Length: 149
Image (cartoon, rainbow, N blue to C red; front, side, top):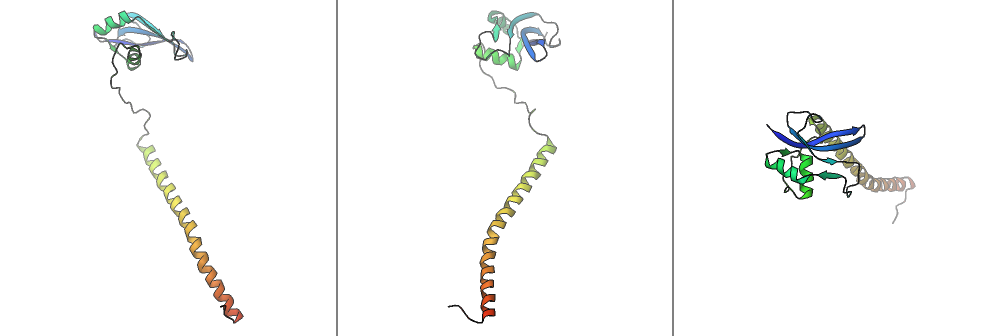
């Protein structure tokens, strides 16, 4: 039988309270379990002693029997010093999909082109104004018939 040490949710809507249980991995999350090993109340402050309570002797027993803790329970055990820190699975749930990545690339290219055009527009008038000033000076000299020294 594949054993897990995991959280079983209790409490009402938006007021979670979890039991840390040893159960068969084939059972539902909140279903039948073999033994209750502790509690976890995420609503309490992180430094509160009552936030996580575990019977460490029983947890050690179940770990010795081959029970595998879930990621969250493994973190609790690492914080308590029962287990050494292990490499965690880096889930890619938050990574954007293929289409979103393509849209982001197009947006970045469009923004870069707009910045280049803006910089070119800033640099171009400085050169054009100098040429325009010279042309205006030449035109005024031609109409007046006199040359400036």
